[in-house]
Length: 186
Image (cartoon, rainbow, N blue to C red):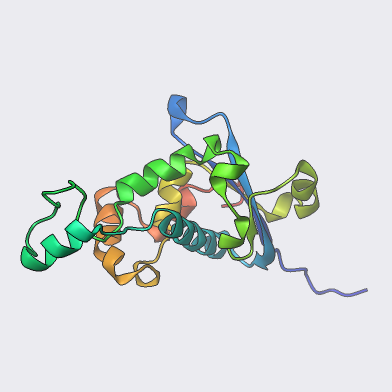
């Protein structure tokens, strides 16, 4: 009989949204194809995948009028012709709202899970049981946790400063990420 302890691997993340009486009744479950040695590593990876999915599905695209105007007037923030923002950086308030509304998405609205490299939201109750109690990470206020888990060095350069400011303004510190983790051992 081996005396070596089996290393815990985290493979399932349960995302709860909202706070207190504003909490969503629904939760979103994600199961990973690979395991992570710590909840923080799993959350960093899932947060980066969610950021990538949001960027891919909500890509900033300048209209022809915006492109022409921004070349001639680089100090303006909005196009006077169509009213769109000329700034290509991600608005983390809008991203936060997108995360909160995740519980209401249908399968068609969500789109392909292949955009989340290794993570799947198509989870059955049996997948969760197979994952086992010790490998599940339960998160509260996921709309903030997933933004806190983003490393500014891992996001697109045009989003980096916006992310840093959003994290600072909302007191989102990755080092204190355990505040969002509801698992008793954390």
